[in-house]
Image (tube, rainbow, N blue to C red; front, side, top):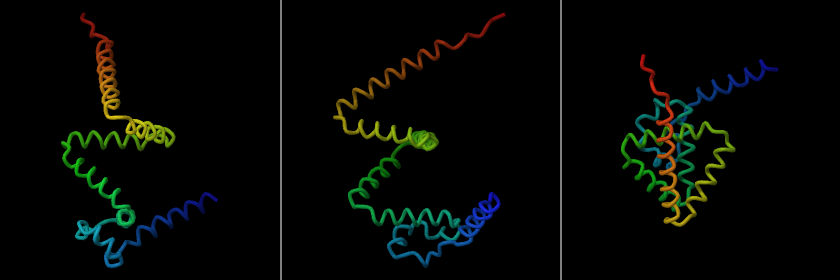
Length: 149
């Protein structure tokens, strides 16, 4: 039974790798969305092509206001210093490693935070920063001192 499952998985992997998405087979809308990648399309793996095609289709079917919101967020992202983008990327990778129940809880907490009035959000952020600074201060104070002989 295990051999059958392994053979099936290998078969699916090899078949999906062998079937690349031909640029000519994309719809006009997909080509428009993916145009910046057209010169690299042939060098991409079929898995990358599939992901990009899926993303293009999500973009095409997305409501205009949602697209505008994403474009605005992407514009803000590009304006961030490289160090901040790296930090946020690492945090997102850590988030993706969390159990789905914890991810769900964090998303709900974030949504609730966004619903608060701006002044309440600022108060909570200040409180969080102060508690974080206090915690960092306590952590540095509690480290053992090197012994002198």
